[in-house]
Image (cartoon, rainbow over all chains, first blue to last red; front, side, top):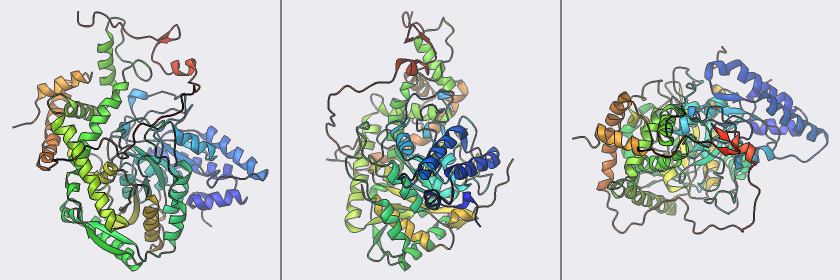
Length: 499
Length: 99
């Protein structure tokens, strides 16, 4: 008899709908798990026991009354602290927003509430979603449940750690350069960055507006797909939203789970393979074993050439900090959040500077300065402008590749979860974590990370990238890969010692 | 030769209204130099005749109906402010900045 917290979201939803479990029982089980192990892992910045149980009780009353319920009604969820939640503290893991209670809900939050999913709490992250290890949180790092001396990925390390440690069956993440997929890879969980514009950015605390994309974090592809369909779809409050039907990701995950990939062409990027010196041998070995499995299921492997991908990392680290330096100008100590140094004597500009010094951590400051540089007169053409041109070439490489193949696969990240402190001294080494995930953000298409195996006892992820609005193929391939595994990798994580 | 000097970092920090400590200046100058070196590789790429991409999804002129929508209640908005007075945001003095 498996515990409640061992069940997938799909199983929990069916149990609640069909009366085998109540949502209060399910939600309580996850809240108790948080109480037991989060003192060790620090995945949550805020837990809302009362609010979660109130939603759960509503669901149970609806079940008792025989009402129609949505596909994930009553299944609790954790939300990354960069998504605003009315009445619940939202900090983006920054001292700048410590204690701030948003007066409104993000569209994503509204949709979770409409779907009657109890919100367990808000998860830890790198400050303002800038980082690959969650070490840049102003409120302490989150630990990887697989090895407490290692990072859980970032920026969404809290959401990934919460799902990996079974403190939540599902979580919301956001992905600007890999912040859903890389944490998924290093914690043995599933994570999807949907097509840019298919999930609303309204109510996300902005980092890089042309790249930010919210998406699902889960234990497997089907659970991710169920959540994807709850949160996805056009939103008139996001001016970059795509007004088109949501790709059928649930059906695709179910199709993939049958283990048949005949007729599916999967691309392997030549330039990634050539750059394998960047990836650890253990990561390559686990990934290649996964590719073999996909071939056994009938997939055809085709080499594609995307020469511009070589330049994706510098392109991203010009565009994202440039947009961030502009977006984060809003933290001026006037309308919300921190104000520091206002002694009645100092002027506005000085108070503003002191506020930003006190409120932002080192990585955020670094990126603001980098972005300010890339946008300043005399450099804008050589840096930001040039990056926008190379971004076009990266997009064109994807478009050409998708004329030949249905999806592109790669390792999700070049290395397994590294040890704390290993890369904080050299930001460029940290940036390399996103080497394989960044191209998709620049292009705008979907990408998912699915567990593929272990290296040195730590999880490795395989990334599946699809064409714009072709999210369904990424879920199909991921679910097919899962069908070759005896147990979900997420179910083999070591038991966590509570504190 | 370094791409960016300590003085330039201090100037950029001022432009971005960031008060930075001496230690931060030292650290950032070295780190930004490494990062900017890698970005210089973009100069190798031939982008003649290429149009810039500012957004992943090309959309032009997204309009909505010009209909009033309710806005957030004033009290709810002011509740998050660091300082308020008379139903407004209170700010430090803004005159004589450079005096």
